[in-house]
Structure formats: C-alpha cells, structure tokens
Image 1 (spheres, rainbow, N blue to C red):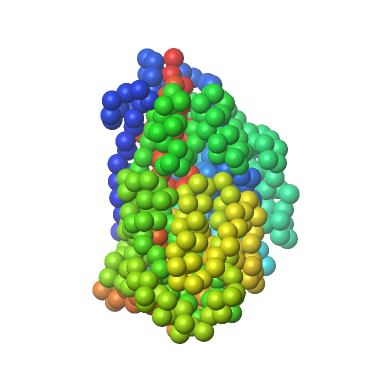
Image 2 (tube, rainbow, N blue to C red; image 1 turned 45 degrees about the horizontal axis):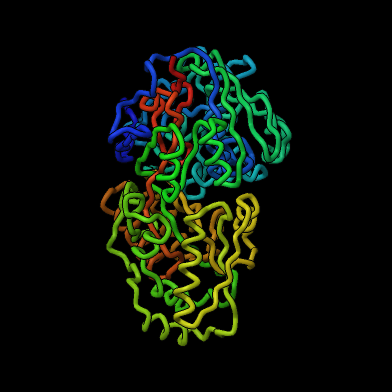
Amino acid sequence: MKKFLLVAVISVFALVLTACGGSGASSDKANGSGKAKDGGSLIIGVTGDPEVINPNYASDRVTLTIQQAVYAPLFWEVDGKPALAKSLDISDDNLTYTVKLKDGLTWHDGKPLTADDVVFTVNSILDTKQNSPNRGNFVFDNKPVKVEAVDDTTVKFTLPTVAPAFENTIKTFFPIPKHIFEGVENIEKSDKNKNPIGSGPYKFVEYKTGEYVSLERFNDYFDGKPKLDKVTFRITKDQNAANLALQNGEINLKSIQPSDRNKVEKASAVNIITYPENRLSYATFNENQPALKSKELRQALSYALDREEIIDAAYGSDEYAKPASSFLTENTKYFTDKVETYDQDIAKAKKLVKESGFDTSQKLTVYYLNNSKSQESIALYLQQQYKEIGVTLDLKPTDPNALSNITLDRKNADYSIALNGYIMGNDPDAYKSLYLSDAPYNYSNYHNKDLDALWEKGAVTADDKERQEIYEKIQNTIADDAVIYPISYDNAVLALDSRYGGQKAATPQPVTMFRDLSKLYLTE
C-alpha cells in the first residue's frame, strides 16, 4: 500500500483582514490585547432557517454552515488534512481506500464514534429508499462502492472500478451516528434531525423556527476543547436588519454583500475578511417551460447580456467578482475557458428570438432571493436587456426557503429563469449532481443522454489526458446548449466583530464562512 495524504487543489485563500478605522491589511488579531479568553459566546447571522441538519441531505448554505459546527468530517476540505481521520491509504491498483480513524472519538452524547458509524453512513446513502442526493458519489459503472469495518478504527472502501473522483468524496465525507439512525425508515424526514447528535466542536441545544439555532461547547471535540462556550445562529432574513444588528453587537459574524461593505465598515467595529469562494453565480433556464426547450431562445437570452455590466450593477466593483466562462469554477480540475461565452450581440439575440418561434406576447419570469441586493440588481438588469430584444421579463423576488423548494421540484414550471450560485469543490465529477438528466439539483431540467454517458465515463476514467478531454467536451456541450448563463466567479466577504481573534486557525472557507469555529475566541 502507498501512503496518501490528500492534497487539496483549492487555491490558497488570500485573506485580507481590514480593521475598521485601520489602514490596510492587519494580522490575525482582534482589537484589544489579542490574548485569548476562555469562554464567551458568538452570534452568527444567517439568512434563513436550516432545512435538514444531516450531512446525508444538507445542500443549502445555511444548513451547511450550521452543520459545520455540529458535525465533523473525515478530512478538512480546504487543505485535505485529517480531521476525524488519522490517515488514508490507497492500494497500488487504486481500488481500495483504507481510512484509519483517530482513537477515542465520541459523539456528543458520549457514545463512541467508530468505523461502524462510517459504514452505516455510506450504506444509508446507498440505500435507494433513503433518497440521499449523495448516492451518485458512491456508485461507479452502476455498481456501488463496498464498505466494511476492519476494526473499530479502520474502514475499507472497495471500488468496483478505478474512480479518481472518489478522492473528493472521501475528502468531503461526514459520518452520522449509527446508534441514532439505525432502523429509521426515512432518515431525511426523521424527527431525530431536529435534535442532531454530531461530533463537531459544538453541541445542539435548541432551534426556534425563524429565530435561532443555539449550540454549546463540546468538551470532547477531537481537536481540543473549543474556546467559546456558546455559538448561536441568528436567523435574520432582512439583511438591512442583520447589518444593524451587526452594528449594535447583536450579531458578531456574518457574510455581507459587497454593496454593503463600506457602510458596514463605517458603522461597525469589525474586521472584513475577503477570499475567493470558488463560487459560480449564474442564471439557469428552466426547460420545463416549453418556450425554453428552444436552444435558440436560450442562446438569444444569453447574447442579450454583458457580464461586466452585470458585475458592475450587482457588486459595484470587479474586486468581488470576475466574469465567468465555464460552468466549472477556476479551481476545478480540467477547467477551460475555451468555451462559447455569448459575448453581447443584441442584433444576433433579436435574430435568434425570431428563429426560436417565441411568442413575444408571452412573459417570462425570473425568480431570485428577496434578501439579496446583488440578485435584485441582476434581475433588474436582465429585465432591461431582454426588453431591448422584445422579451418581457417579470421579477419574482422570493423567500430563500420557498425558492429552494421551488427549484428543487423537478416538475416545477413556474420559473423561466432562476438566479442561483454553487460551490462544488475541486473535482468535476461533483458537478454531475447539477447536470445529469435525473440529478436532484438539475435546476435547468436539462436532459441529454449522451452527456449523461460522458459524465459517467469521466468518473471512472483513470488516464488523466483522456479524462481532461471528456470534461472539456462536457463543458463545451453545456455552453453550446446554453443550459445556463454563467455570470461570475465570486469572492466571499465576511464581517467579524473586532473583539474576536483566531481567524487564521479557524480557516475561512467557501460556503460555511469558517471550517472550524472551535478556534475563534474572544480577546481580553
């Protein structure tokens, strides 16, 4: 066996920490002495209620952010270093992955966390009756990965074929407790998710819908006792109200919209943290609507737009976003920008509208988050540009939870266009959950059996050059078919109360703000 340490190809985050009232970059220190204080609390602002706090099902930003505090992964995604795991060995034939867990791991209720929990989690994902959207990550050539517990701390995964994509699956894997969920007929709908038992730095205490999720310190956390006593996720859908709460010290940490940065810095004693989030912001065209089954109409709607104008309208500066090309983000293996990007051409857009046969007396709709200023700006820009090519677009600002339910319904035909964004990691195989014909997150409702076969082939192709050719073909096909309109690759902007330190150790990361909240502390 060869020893293998996961090495992430996520670009190293360039952190810019600017203290309010300061003059440029600062070190990883809060205001005051900088000495860590034991205890205290942290209030984190989130934009909506969590859905299912369970790693087998979580997919939205709010739920994943809370999950990161409650559950712990085998490996840290940002740099691939072991978390619950101690090591990973891969056999010379690349068919057997052996994970060794750290000794003495426990769940929040004091029960031991063992290899049996990892095996149970995988098997529950593979169980078609459990309807986990992660199932495809453990199936190659239509055959499931086999998993077994060698002993209490050793798990062996046996692949049916060589699958380079499996590395990313291991790297992003969170176990759930067997003793809690064994025998549960429907894990996703189980009330046990309302009182989650995890292994992360903070234990669940209470959830009040529309108000907060409160957690307390888990003293037996594998990476040492967390520095703070409590963490509370405050649910504030109105971002103006959330920014005011940040100013008043009622919220200590939140993601902020670029357009709010200057106002937040002037009004609040915060450190601003920016870093590449490896996120694609995009507009998806819903092919459940008959008119949008026309590739010509989707192409027309794409040619009507200009990415730089959208970025200027939504973010006010290219400091926070850069024009996108592929549906893959730049950190993803085999990314190419050599695809059709539909550079603005109004005349061509008008011509394609006519060729599509679209009835211009018919209205299209765009759904977007009602608490996102950037999405509102994008929607208004789309409305303006489409009017120029004879297409009427109605705006539908929508509550985050409602929008999630609408776009997750694979039969929904209410929206013509939805503004969305995703962060999928380093391996392109992860993106198939968005573009396979029967994928749960196929928001475009795009169906292409030939492309489905390419996705499956890419997952099990060992030759790097051949794999690159496959994913470049996939990128070009999705671009040529105008399945989505990629808008921008975005940066994250966080505001953290300047009394808190430990940002570097906590490690800013995509989606969840920080990878390990146990490292944040109040200063004396």
